[in-house]
Length: 377
Image (tube, rainbow, N blue to C red; front, side, top):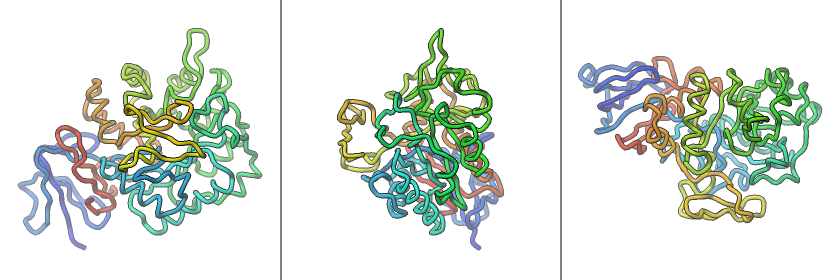
């Protein structure tokens, strides 16, 4: 099998920097990182000037892209379109995200994901079910008429994945502890979100099954002096990661910096929460019978509520660097930390034996190319 390589003036492997380095892979596996001058002439190499090669970006919350919402087209082909749209902005892998839907739609999304993984559709890491097990008091743009608290018997009837990753966002305060434990035992990664919990409602027993918090600050009870809320629990639960939208609209930059200061290393990660408008010429789309429109950089529904984001991962990373987070840390927030959160032990670093996945950014942090499973896009 032929060796291939890409090179750039700078390479960040997820741990340290290399100057004038090449990333070498064979098939879908990284072989080595070495100085450009040591690269054998027999290995074909694409060089990127004024650029940095880093671990491939992983976005664990992507509702749509390329003009398609997963809710509107729950198929492997739709997942492929979404992945292609986000690849333009540096995303190597993502979780297509289903916004609160009926049990039959949940089943269809799981089946479509299984098929996408069987078909080796580049970039599909699994699926994110954002609801419908949410709190109506923090519904955001979700249809609260779909919300319910599930029982184990109903969950057993769903076609859970045999491969790939399943992330479920739920309002943990409304979920029975035994249900949370059952999902955790199935390998489902649980994240608390769209939650109106008071601090004490998110008990240690429940948090033992919860791995993270979805889009920190947004659609969750706020931190207040007398009531720490879900935000307080998220910030103070050291084992739990927090995803955060860094478009500068959903969360104030200083709130991002505050969370970064409080959370342990590796526990704050970037998501886009992107919608169909990303990678599309159309700035309008339908969600649950409502028209979502891009107005002044914000995606809003008929009620004027924020409805996802219009941003790619490269701009998200550029934002946090501009706000004051060190470049290497910002890159890890978009690659290494999501890989750890999703328990992907072969992603998030440019290390021999890891999957051949990388993102190439210009010095202005705009995506130049993406390597996914050994193929450069």
